Amino acid sequence: MAQPYRNCIISAGLVEGIEPDRFYLRFEREGEDREPLTIFMRADEVAAVLFVCGGALWSAMMIERSPDPDVEKECPSP
Image (cartoon, rainbow, N blue to C red; front, side, top):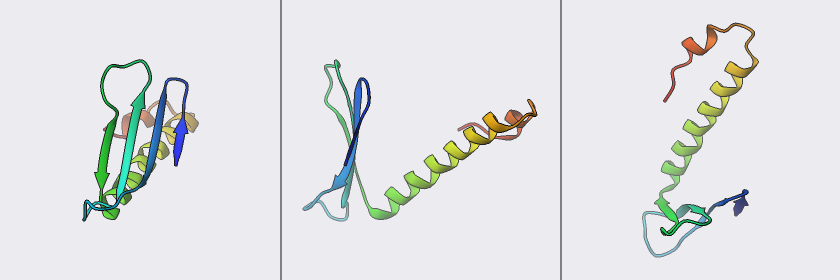
């Protein structure tokens, strides 16, 4: 599965032959001379990435929706 953006592509999928890793996550940036960043992970590591990213998105949405300017002080940044 891949998600293209204006100047990059983020993709993920399954891999074989490098157990215990079964998944990959890849970041490719157009116009850069370096190789794409590919991370191989186990299922629990993928779940951890989803969990922390979901929490960060939720925190950002709560800050944007709050009418109280002090809410940002209550949400720790990474």
